Image 1 (cartoon, rainbow, N blue to C red):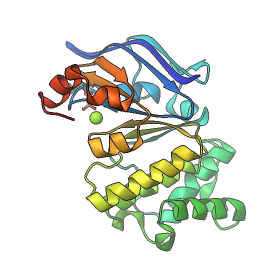
Image 2: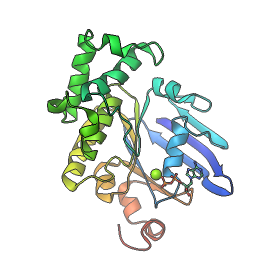
Image 3: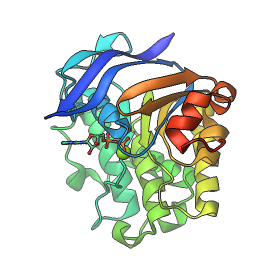
Image 4: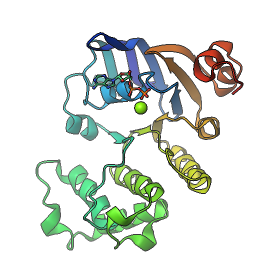
Length: 251
Ligand SMILES: Nc1ncnc2c1ncn2[C@@H]1O[C@H](COP(=O)(O)OP(=O)(O)O)[C@@H](O)[C@H]1O
Ligand SMILES: [Mg+2]
């Protein structure tokens, strides 16, 4: 069954057609990758799932409910979490505080939380946040200030901030961008563990090693249009994809 259903989505920026008749069905419990050249519309599409952009036409349905018109925090509360292309963390706070803030927000609602006063007293959320940091391999750095982290560690911290919210759907926009190979492989392992817990993931990714290590299905966007949607093996052998995505080179 689809947990996320996107039908006939169009999005223009002035004269530019960023998304053109996009359809996408993401099955619950799967990892669905979206690939395509730079400027294909991948981030624009993700922005339509999280309330940062509104499609001009079309529908976006999550868990049976329309996401259109909802505010980003309402979509988040419905169970959708996103790791952005540029890490969005609280640079002046410790790693533990970074993970506790979304934990409080999930428990109390975005506008009722008082993370500052409660940080020391909330043992269960503290333990949960520490567990998430351990999960992503950052437990030893829990007390460090987040701005000092490497790029790869910032990504992992952001993942912990998402996971602590117990999302049903995790959206990742180029989670391994700028990472060294060792960091990339650690991130692949982490994402495999997340997938095993049954969390549905939509992953935008440039690195084909990551895509083919993780994806159950792949959609290919080119110039705002879905030109292919298939199992990984079908995508590998698809001449249209090779042409559009890699200028004829083999995947
Ligand atoms: N807010 C915006 N205003 C105008 N044009 C935009 C905006 N966001 C993206 N675009 C344009 O839309 C196209 C798709 O961009 P994007 O979704 O970021 O592509 P991708 O993530 O696949 O690299 C690009 O041509 C980009 O320049
Ligand atoms: Mg992008």
